Image (cartoon, rainbow, N blue to C red):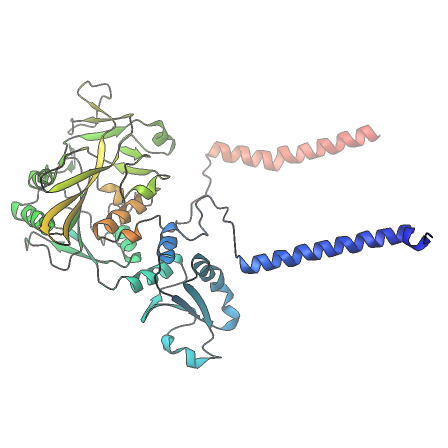
Length: 458
């Protein structure tokens, strides 16, 4: 017997609607359960500005013991830290995030007595470090300070025309100094002219583009330091003699480097790579997009680096040294030995064709257990100056070199990216055309379209 009610149209529609509601509710419930258990997000910015860097992921995922991030603030302001801190918890089950309101639970606020709201404390084991702010650099820096219990000092050699670490002009190294601070390195200047001996507290020394010759005692001090197990980053510019620019040959330092297996050539590299011209770089900037295999550059495979006013190097292994190439200029580059004139002929047969080695890293066998000298030589110093350090991968290269020299290989990676400048620069002609099209052409087009529709309907 057929029941009319079951075949009524309204009944079918009600059954369909009820089924759809059940399906939608089931999907929403499942989606919420998955979202609660698996906190995932997608960063669509070109340089992954809002994602944690590879460096942070490497440090957090490598934790061997639990870590706790405690954020102290008023309950109503917890949200301003949640997005950033929860990313750390999502990287590793070893990381736990705790939110404390000092007003509601003052017994838990002993770590921030005298401090302002919005303070984050990172604790690993019995060691606690405060993050300077809620940026990734500061929070990861607190992790690093917890893990690195020894003080590491980077000493910049001064006194022979090197770049100054407190100089904020285009040629200064103040940005380099700030970057080192983010990785918890102490930074100071030393002078080998007044005392020809590297201080014992220097983990790494940096020779940042000396314009004058090092005296023999200075060169001997650098040599002894590395051969006793010290670490050195040598940034040596070509010996130009053009007008006001006069850079010394620095033969004493060059002989030390030759003894380690690195010979700086007395030439100037010019890069005719069209990619560099598209990026707004002149031929005096050597553009590097391919790298050799080494811990310093392995994470730079997807980034370009630029080296203004550079010279080439020759390398070979020695009895106590092992030297590896880091990167070279492009195949479209060339090197000229005419260093006293800006009028350079690219077709001069005396030019050396690229690719040309720009940087090398080496180790020195001291013969002592757990005491290995290390050195990195780059044929340019301006790439680490304030004006060029923000270029693409230059920041990462500078910090990676220091990390490797200081035996901090676990810190070598790509750092958090700076916010990109997406401003559009227009010429006066382009501005006039934009104003003309937006104020007159587009309105006239709309009026014409409306008139056409009216005319057809008429």
